[in-house]
Image (cartoon, rainbow, N blue to C red):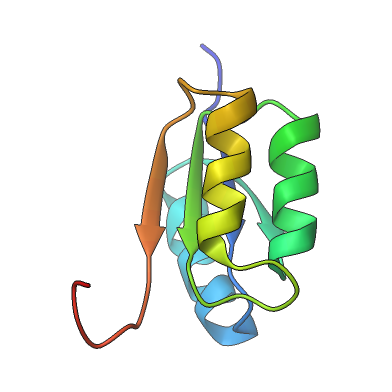
Length: 88
């Protein structure tokens, strides 16, 4: 059975480590991208089953990362995680 591979794009090291640890406890493979530029590069050059994406990222924001992924991999699932205070 193929192991699920997740790209976590999160710039807060403690948050990223916590999420990664929990996902790995669930037997998932997790790769962390520490900023939007690295996240976009990894998402476009590797195969992932899911992208967990923060919106507030250095260098390239999460919106732009999401747009780039959608252009090149329209079927790739993306879940947006953010600490923004409102839905808008």
